[in-house]
Image 1 (cartoon, rainbow, N blue to C red):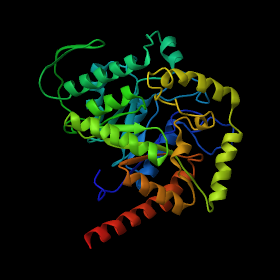
Image 2 (image 1 turned 90 degrees about the horizontal axis):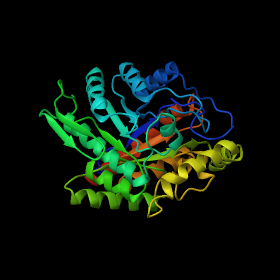
Image 3 (image 1 turned 90 degrees about the vertical axis):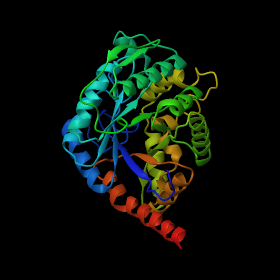
Image 4 (image 1 turned 120 degrees about the vertical axis):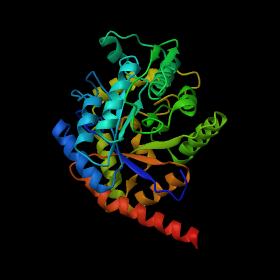
Length: 364
């Protein structure tokens, strides 16, 4: 992203019960379909450009209830006018040929606002419960890369044939084609070398777990350099759990309370479940491989990004993220009933004012 372009903001859709933390702390956050449709309409007015759904088919780790991602995404798009909504999907459970057709219709229904987040999978019990084979880490990313190749092939006009290790398509062509050109946006996450290389080869956006500025900057450099070798450019998004209070001490106290009241049984279960996703990789850099247990209280390391403090401190941190090449900040909060509004009304305007000041200085 050019430094002249505004950084973008997304929020986590609350389609899983339990909120955004594995904690027993009190939260004013709902997860019903009606709640999420209303939240999408509010977020759009507040200046959020994207919303990201989670995908989960099996309960556990405070997410005992779940609403399916793609159907909810479509409902949210129908209730909004500008918001781009990202549907999370699991290769191995979803067929890429089926999803490609569903996506075209969703893209037309929303006038080009549907996007997909291809999640390679970390929850083994989910796959085995549904009777699907569980692949080892790097194989899951190979399957995801083929999944994206099939999507892209079916989102172009010529009959498409694909013979991979995981998927087959024979002279298949869909009409109509998506409104978005060259195709709906494709997001993807993961920290491992396999994930980074896959993003560089086939994805439009690379989602990163929360981390320090230095760690994020290194990931941005690595993926950008690898993408350039393939003649491509990738955009970057980072997860962040936001706690904005009048003083830094107040914000840190909220974070400490969340960690203090973490559900030990749920946290232990989640920590064990994600070990295969991170430590099983050859480079030990997969998702959550560097996470301490307290980091996992916010499941995507959102505390590490450092958006905890006063509005001014959070604004400064967001501008630092932009400076290292982050294009989008994915926001999660404890109390969706009021903290998402607070972020939109108080922090986004501060970021925009600072960006305008930078632009004026550059022009001068």
